[in-house]
Image 1 (cartoon, helix red, strand yellow):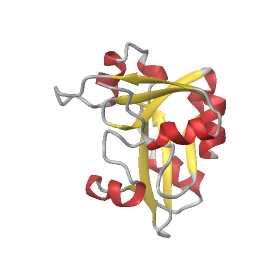
Image 2 (cartoon, helix red, strand yellow):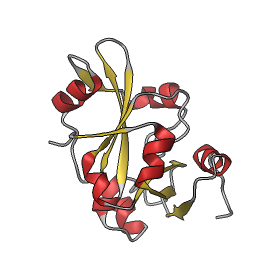
Image 3 (spheres, one colour):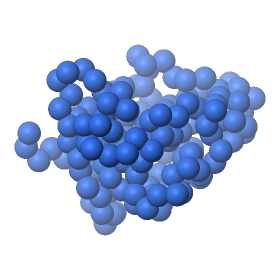
Image 4 (tube, helix red, strand yellow):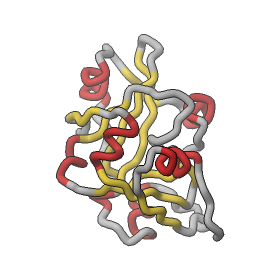
Length: 158
């Protein structure tokens, strides 16, 4: 695998934000977060998944949570200022974000959607998020991720 540059990486480099690219073999089809954490040899508590939701107002919201965690939709709706939110169907993720399931990075989506990160991330200096392509993860300082995504930390987990 050569030096693949994803849109997320280009954005980080343009902004002068340091990161470490981690690649993994996705040919076995195991692209769920816990499998990815094992493949990149990181504690699953430091590996985060990017979830894309839509509120009943039509607004789109991004939530970044630990791969082992489950998004509490009621907490997420309250955080986003919505009565109710639902996950965007997998088939629509590309249309909204420019990324596909398993390769959806919180960095470099089509639009800057309101983004929230599970407050658990604040316990770590670095966390790992999707690099914008299946097989590529980005390790980044939490403070830098908060800055580049304009995210707010919140209580989001069940």
